[in-house]
Length: 143
Image (cartoon, rainbow, N blue to C red):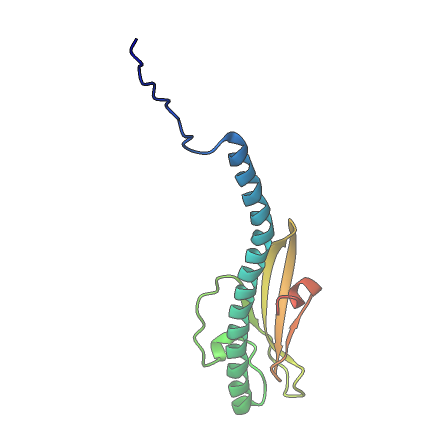
């Protein structure tokens, strides 16, 4: 009798099992639920920083105008500034007032955002003294 050599064939699994795949999907969902609100808030803060830069430029233009005319401009066309096109906020000049103090708002930026699936209108003001103010607590947290 001849002995035949039997080679046992071992099949190694290639790929993931269904349970491993579901576990990966669950972990990715948990990580996304943690990271997404942080990313959204970071993007909103970047938009607010853009508004702060433009409001600062409007404030400096208002102060230059006030030095010449002893009153703040009521229209942005009277200012010596070329603003970039507004992307996220609408800007307006609050002028026509005298130079009575550093707490007078000279420019404002307004944006309506969705936060927790409800509309939140944020209004940021800059005063002649350079202080930024906001109208709601959600908006203040972005400053």
